[in-house]
Image 1 (tube, rainbow, N blue to C red):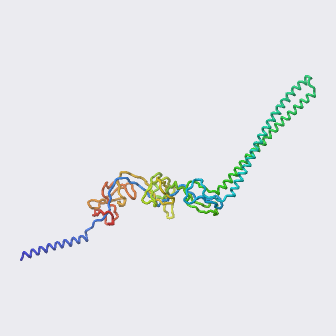
Image 2: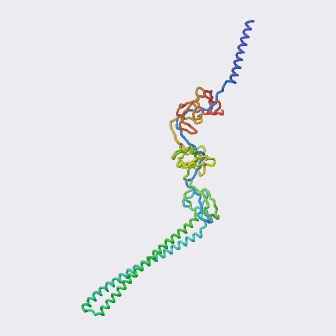
Image 3: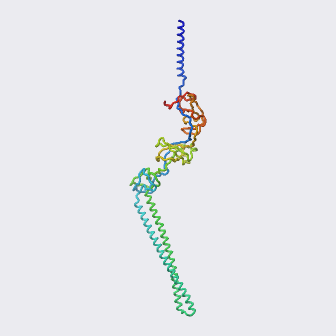
Length: 415
């Protein structure tokens, strides 16, 4: 009977211990047990890292050549030669204003020029005729004067010898006098050529005046014929045929879509990092998931202050590859300031205040101090603190993640 009592006591004691341990375990679980913290992880890798600077806001695709085409005179639209979206060549007629009266002015100026050219030609022909006649008369009278001089000299000798009578000498002297007067008269006629030369000069001046008048009439008429200043596409047309327009009124918008670039604003804090010829990454809403490469070709020399007192400067970026780009598209621009290859790097999201990171060791999170190099919002170079292929925690903002805590690796925090 005593043995049975002892056995029952022992069983009850064991049951009591189990009950105590069970209650204690439950109490410990509820009051002291910390469940593993679910985390996402990545590995420390080796490769290329870039230092980048992103634009303060989305940039805009611009055309290097763009123009709001305006009329150079008042008038009425007689014909629109192009349509919106049409590509045009430099010099191609875009719009015509009514110009019948201006055509008449051009025709009159052309006629006046023709008259002036005819008169000049007549003056030149008259000059040549007068010149040839004058030269002929001078030569003829000069020969006659020479002969008369010789006859007079011979007659004087014969008179001295008493062979020639005084009356015959007088006849020879008279003939000499007539020949001399004829020669002088011929030379005087040659001076009249100077008058004809002045007529030619006056005719040449009239030609210059007539040509200037014609050029002026054409210039005025050409203001009524609006032509494309460069190759481009007609973006929009603001007028209709038959509509009256004033001088300087915008008629259409023309852009050269063959030479596009991006203007993007950057914060003044990045002014010292951006320089000419740096490569850029360009992302467009019109082409989701695709990245285009570009290059910085111009940087604004001044800082602009907005109404909100933000200070930015403009950076112009040209495309390094072709695409179906359109003027006015928004573009996100990231400038590649510098880059390194074959370096250890981690996702930027795995860093805490750019000072620490958590690695996985024995199922626990271990905090490590790190020294960083270049990087961007995606990846950062690790100079010291981590080794290649180490497992690193990326979900560093999760509640409960502390140094030494037990962790549970998950593919996403939604699990």
